[in-house]
Amino acid sequence: MDALFEKLHGKELSYNNLLDLDAGLNLIREFDEPTFAILKHNNPCGLACRSTVKQAYMDALAGDPVSAFGGVLVCNRPIDLEAAEEINKLFIEVIVAPGYADGVLDILFTKKNRVVLKLKNDIFAKQTVKTALNGYLLQDRDLHTETADDFRTVTNAAPTQNEVSDMIFANKIVKHSRSNAIVLAKGKQLFASGIGQTSRVDALRQAVAKAKSFGFDLKGAVLASDAFFPFADCVQIAEEEGITAIVQPGGSVRDQESIDECNKSGISMVFTGFRHFKH
Picture 1 (cartoon, helix red, strand yellow):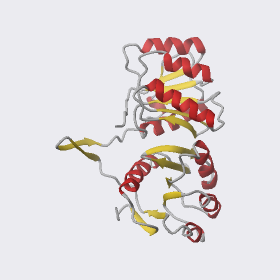
Picture 2 (picture 1 turned 120 degrees about the vertical axis):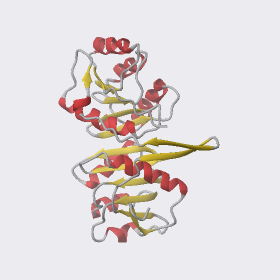
Picture 3 (picture 1 turned 30 degrees about the vertical axis):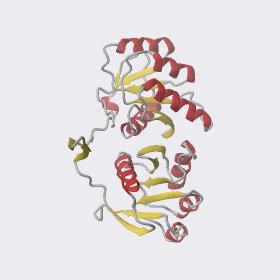
Picture 4 (picture 1 turned 135 degrees about the vertical axis):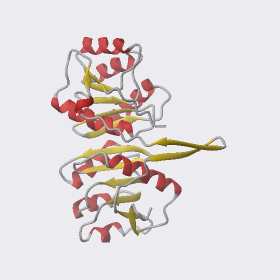
């Protein structure tokens, strides 16, 4: 851990803190532009890419200000004074960033138990290990990230440039969300996600309900799924909510049902050919 970050302030990191940090740092390294992520129980509950750190934080927080309480904050840019003043209004467990502007630490240190970490590097092991039964499970870490070149349009309607950008954004988040997972996003802001569900339909309904509860208009939003669609039900729900583009792995023997439903409603859909499926 000492090779990853320097602890500047706060209480001892707990088991849960360390797991959230692992999830958050693996997620934030997917993004090049200024990005802020808020995590709770290993899942992103808020994330946004913006031109300033403050705005990235504010829009990440807007994605789910309820879940953000007591969460872990991760940023890929140094924290400036404007952002720190906003962050200090929220009860958080941990914040990690590559640096802090002059005066920021004086603000963040006002909460004695708040853990403040300075990121040194983001080099992670290429394999993951988990205990299972009376032994261990070892697997390669999921290092695959799709780009626009990996998207195969399967519908009559092709996604716009903005939709492609948002689908890349949403697909990065769904990769790091507990399966079954659905992510709804627009303008490089996480509107809501449905995570850890036994059904992709339940995941979508959870995401829609959360987005609406925080005042987001889903018209023109994109949907990312870590699972393929063996039925047209998710497309039908997306159509009802005004979602205009979908990215999913594809690969079901019944892919055509979802494609046909998209064509009926004018929704564009792309297949990635790769299933992340985080467990």
